[in-house]
Image (cartoon, rainbow, N blue to C red; front, side):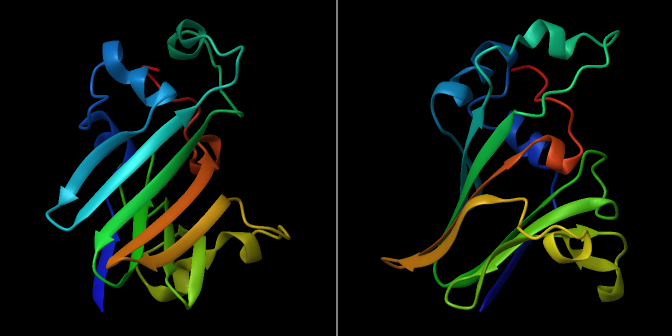
Length: 167
């Protein structure tokens, strides 16, 4: 089994994709954008904004605004059979970040909080934070036609990101 844990800042990956400038970031709202992370691994994503979202009010640094309804749908595609994971951190560090990990046929995608680098500091968010359900929506991980495909949707605020800046 190939081990893939992407401990990269998701937003950095998003802005290095087709939606890397404010002018074409809006394309990731109406359509999926894609990032080739390695020869065998790619990520597709789409940003979901509420109808009343105004980017000017959410990017003004003098205003403490947030967008609780702003979400992102992510699809990781790996050529081969593997468990997949992606790490996200508003500060770009592993500690204090979040990871979504899943394995086809064994474990549906779940979110974990990374409070340290030791296994004792990794906690599953839906169990250890007292919620009865996962904070992820539409989670799947399957092995289809030689590819491992993991999908999920979550809010930006779930990862400590107030709003998708530049959208």
